[in-house]
Image (cartoon, rainbow, N blue to C red; front, side, top):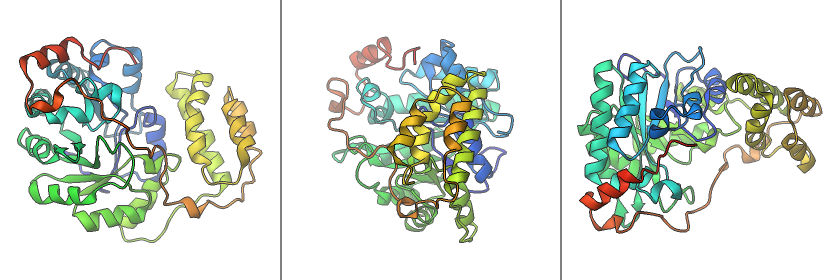
Length: 375
């Protein structure tokens, strides 16, 4: 990564609403030598100086190597956002998101829909690399297998990314149509490893340290990216670091220790929200559901956390925990977060008719940029 070496080949994947700096700090404390990427920043929102976008660009003082992900569809806007990152020394690494399967993004040609248009994909990459490379900031790309099984893009996209100067490519082994359902196709990751000269990072269905080791063994990938698997389990990065170093040691916190993590998390979130405890506690709610997954605490406990409005409220609920309850190993390697399939892939009209933008498509996309200035 330029002058930076990632000693433990594990990456925290950007996840909207999850990987702000409080969560990154928790993950890094367990696995300090990995790469921890901030949640996705909308390029247009950053250019427009949207306050939420600027908040998401913040890093904790302990984050010595700062990774930020941008996404957008207009090459000019994405270049402007990258220029802001460079000029204001916002990050040491820029990742570009071409893997988001969310309909509100893909229906306008963004996210995992964008690589179908080879010319647009190349133009976005070239614009960002042109700005970042002279500043010594490495650029990487996150992609999916394709739109669906009949419209794959990962071969072309990965080669374009390599040609345009990306330092590595992360492949999520699913199509847009698969969304987060089924099992990721690790064989596609192995194919890219054989095709590229730059490192390939594997992503998809890593729920345990053993999964991470198995992915590397099966695919030959240079490292792994962790998304849903670490939700409510920041210690997974410690497990993976141990596994990659050959150690069988695993972190299986009891409920009391998890409660301590919850309290630390909400205090970090309060700092993130400039002292606003209510916003911090509301942000914490989704994390609490993940933290408590599998523990026999009952629906009443979970409901009580949903009513918390302050740090003291959270502390009061944690104080009710039986601290000696063991971590639920039965679900330790089971899927977390979203697992559903997309019912339909939403794309711009006639998007699949050509691998290049028509003049009309270009006009329509850039006049109606889906990555607007709001959040």
